[in-house]
Length: 329
Image (cartoon, rainbow, N blue to C red; front, side):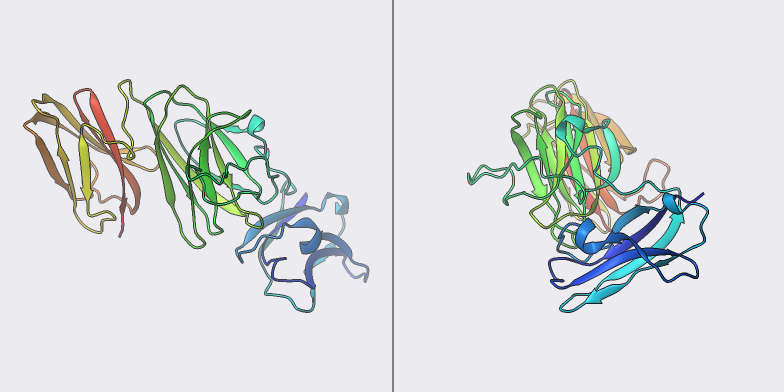
């Protein structure tokens, strides 16, 4: 028995001052409609015109042959669209279970998750007027939380992908949090990243947030590279300075590093994809003060890797550094 109807909708209260769209249901062959969903009463006033997912309960109509209608009526309105309508065993759309920091979704060291902020509350706003604020705008939109582990020296790399101006930031606790790092997307952009060296033992919390009137679906990708000796992030000046050129790269990639003086240690170069899968590992002896190699973008089996975000980790003795780069096709 289908207990829900699911559809994608695109529209905006902000640009539709006197228009409304709705989902109605009626028994087949009758004239009386019952409203199940309304743009005006059930959706936030999100501004960009992107498709959002909505599931509505139809279980009270069990055993009835029904018809659905999506009327759009009014004046002074903007475009509205419906797509991918289907019935099935869908739970009604509701508040995200990780709406509160105390209920943050617990994730591992490498993950890729999808979510939506539109039906959450505004529980945290890290913006301050100080120049040291980790975000540059007042974030009074809905937000969702993800708990991660990690310890001192571990390297966190996180990317949010969205089309509605999503912000991503990292805080150290739920009670009176300190915002440690933050970034954002612009409308239509696909990926911005946080690269941060964790200062102490976790837990930490990644938050997807937005300004008032901005919400929507997103994808969050994260990788925590654990090391007993500490991985130095891109904001530091590491004793091993790894340079990747060009970045983004559409062809062969040059990796070079100036090594500390008087080194004669084992050198390990590793390439990881955004999911944390190691695609290449090269070992050798670090003799002298320079290291350089050219990578032809093939994995250890000789297969060309896909386009996307990658991380290069170079370890020399007890020192290591991580650099993010992008491969284009």
